[in-house]
Length: 229
Image (cartoon, rainbow, N blue to C red; front, top):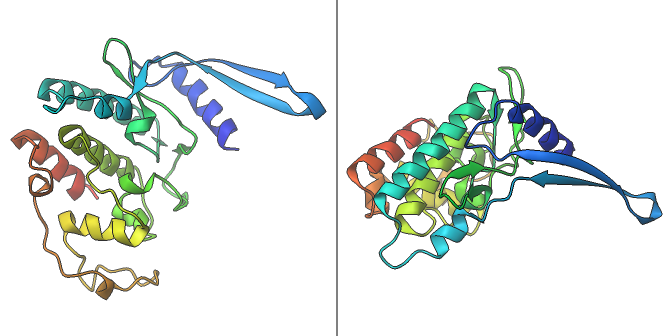
């Protein structure tokens, strides 16, 4: 079902030919032994993903102008998806492909979903390090989960490492609360078994306090992505 959903979404997106969305060229059906049908998706070729690019950076890190351009292309692609009522739900550096000309394209739509105002979205989405707090707290969510992931990715480009590298859902929440502050007793959801007292009291911080490499503008931008939640 995930593959069929991805094919349907990509065929729909291909019609717009957006420069920041990976292109699906062809869908091939191959009959294997024992009458098993294999579906092959043929995409445009891109040389590397953002994770590869970050790992190969020199000690000086990624140039600010490059971060600015890639961030703009990422946000442009996400805005295009959201304008078509599509939530990607798994934005991370491994799913952002970089062309030989240095341009970014969003890929891997296996978890993407078209949404409306009444639909209920499942909680099993987004790789842990890029998962929004409302998802970690098993609350309802919307397209803002993609914006949270974008903020994490932009910070990672500046720091050359993940902003919230949690080892478990509880540890991930604790790392997030370092930035957002621990929710109040009134804000804490009653629907989860995890107790608020499991986490130490924390006050909100500026993103730059966790990621000193951020410039003034990126600090403001990531701060907006946090408030957007």
